[in-house]
Image 1: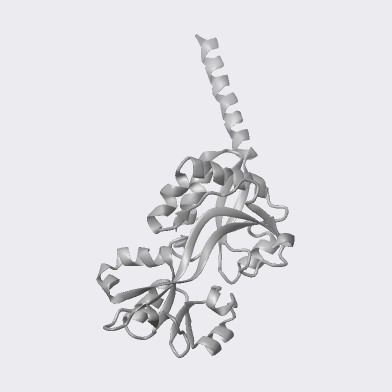
Image 2 (image 1 turned 90 degrees about the vertical axis):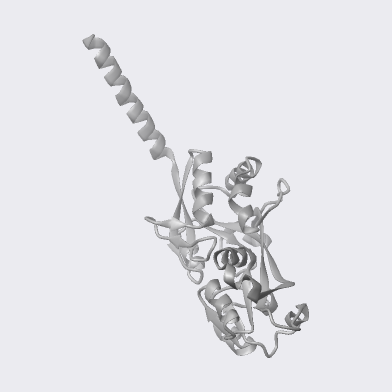
Amino acid sequence: MRHLRHWIHGCWIALGFLFAGYACAAEVVKVGGAYFPPYVIKSNSLESSGLLPQLLESLNRAQGDYQFTMVPTAIVRRFDDLQRGRIDMAIFENPDWGWQGIDAAAVDMGLEDAELFVARDEELRGQEYFDQLEGKRLALYRGYHYGFAQFNSDPDFLTRTFNANLGHSHDSNLLMVVRGRADIALVTRSNLYDFIKRNREHARQLLISERVDQVYRHHAMIRGGAPISPERFAALLDKLRADGELQRIFSPYRIEVKAVVAGSSIATDAED
C-alpha cells in the first residue's frame, strides 16, 4: 500500500512538472490595447473588456503554443510601442494608417467595419445633408484617420481645415450632435449601433448616412522579430473563422466576417 501511495505521489509530481513545462513553453505575445469602444473598453490587466479581450481569450483557448495578452497603449502611441518592442502586435489596423516605413507585416483579419456620418434628424433634412462638409461643425475622434481628410490625422490640420472638434469618445461626439453642439459626427459603425442599444432614447434623434467615409478591412500589424509569425497568426484566425468564433464575437456589433483568400492575407511593409 505504501508503495502504491509513493507511486501515485510520484505520478502527481511528474504531471506537475509536465504542466509547468507546458505553461513555460507558451510564448507570450503582447497585443496593444488602445481605448476605442467597442474594440477596447477597458485595457488594464486586472479589468479588461471589449472585443479585443474576447478575441484574445478565443486565441488562447484554440492553442497552447502562445499566450496572447493585452498591454495598454494609446492610439497616438501605438506606433512607437510596436517599434520599441513594448508590444508585438497592433490589431484592428489598416496598413494605410501611418504604418508605412515601420518594420511590420500586415495580416488581413477578414473583418470589416465602416465609418459613418451621423447628424441630428430634423424636419426636411435628408441624405443630401452629408454631401457637403464645408461649413459644418464636425465632431471627430482625436488621433483617428478619416478618408475625407486623406487619412491625415494631424489635429491642427483637422481643426483648421474642417472646423473639427476632436474628442476621445464616440459617445461624447454623438451626444454633441444630439444636443446641437456639432452638426456631424463621424462614428465607427460598430460603436454607433452599440451606442443606440445603450441609449434607445436617442435612436430616433439620429440621421445616419448612407454615405460611408471608409470601410475598415481590419489587419493585425506584427512587428519584425515578434514571437509569432504572420503566417502562424493568420492560420489561427482561419481556425477561429472556421469554428464560428469570429462570427460569435463580432457579428453582434455589425462587424462583417469575411473570407480571406489563401496566400493573400499577409503583406510586408515593403509591399504596401
